[in-house]
Image 1 (spheres, rainbow, N blue to C red):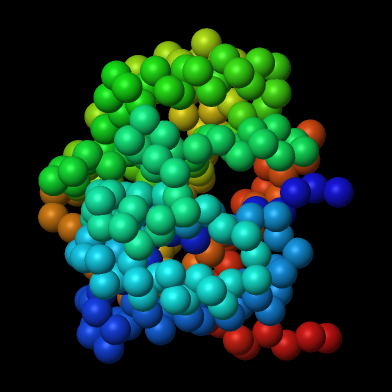
Image 2 (cartoon, rainbow, N blue to C red):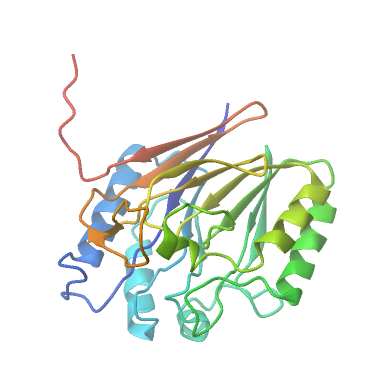
Length: 259
């Protein structure tokens, strides 16, 4: 049987009752968790891949912690550029920082999930500085011949939307050099872009999802960003020794009719 993993990204929580881009991020998260509980209680893990908060305020992490108490599936939290590492750690006191970063390895039956911390405080673009790259090398070396699956908030690959590519991961070449040396990285899962994207980067399969609140408009010219109200999704990922399959599920769509 394949392992089922749920990926949720870009929650952008603000103060309860307030709107962001004309939408209620908390209401969207609540509906997302309800849908996961209803349909995917058998999942091995839910990975929240960054931008948990929109403001980085401690209150938003308290709100998140309260909602996560309702989630029936084990979860792991990652940080994005909108997050605040110190405020996050004040609330999620059980999370242990690795070398000062929210990064970890999750051993699973089909290999290892490596969750990166690409947050550079005060910056929109992502960074993997020397310390984080050294940590990643240690984890890749320890994995040996086991399959590896990378989760990162910032995509290291070009999406060909100019604004998004300008705020991606700065050390993309350095990251790829490590992944190539390992040679057994089967997939990179990312967030940040608020777009459904799939393909491969220098031979490594990749995927990106829409967030749970607002989305980025599809536009390949200029450097202005436009926000859309395209449906929010979460990813349903199946991993076994032969395949990695990613389904993007519009959890607000209740229109299914069975024949």
